[in-house]
Length: 274
Image (tube, rainbow, N blue to C red; front, side, top):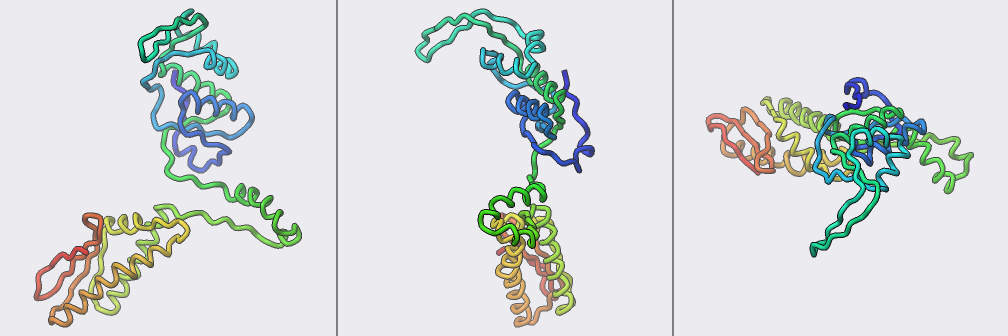
């Protein structure tokens, strides 16, 4: 049994009330109940179905009750093996026999049955991982309404527009880094008539150092102003004092830090790691 999963392109621009990450029995059960209540639910798992998982495969009374409430118990019973007695062993090797209604079923089958039931109840299942979570702007505005009313009169809030600001994603920060490095390249060309180049390793290093979410893109200026620009300026001054002429600058990264390549004449190209 393979739960139907739409293509990723179909889900890209859809809005969800709930995203359940992990389509095991617990996640799929939650998605099924939410879907039956009318919510727009995305059930996400990193692996495609069917998939195996190491498990004892035993279903006890609590599990059977949950499956019955989900109306998935008949499908489970049709595939499972029924047991009237189970044994529990202690660490000291004592055994206790318990009579009852027990089932055993491979996890690949159990997970597929419950996930299929979630889809039948209205959830949408897809294969993938979560890269970023962004709340809906309208939802954030509504959530802020009640706390704001506790501090400000409704008449004042009626004249205000609440604009939620999201943290910058790594992709956004990378674009800002490239923009700022492009401005440095323009300045170097304008004042020194030589090219300034950088690679993706330098961009990734700067992004990795932007750890303060509250600072947003301002961390980029701090890193460039306090680290990259002083190193380049020192090399320009040193070359000028020794009579050497720079013909190019390249910014990269190595061993977790910035690496600078300065090309000049008559000196050969050299690599300076700071």
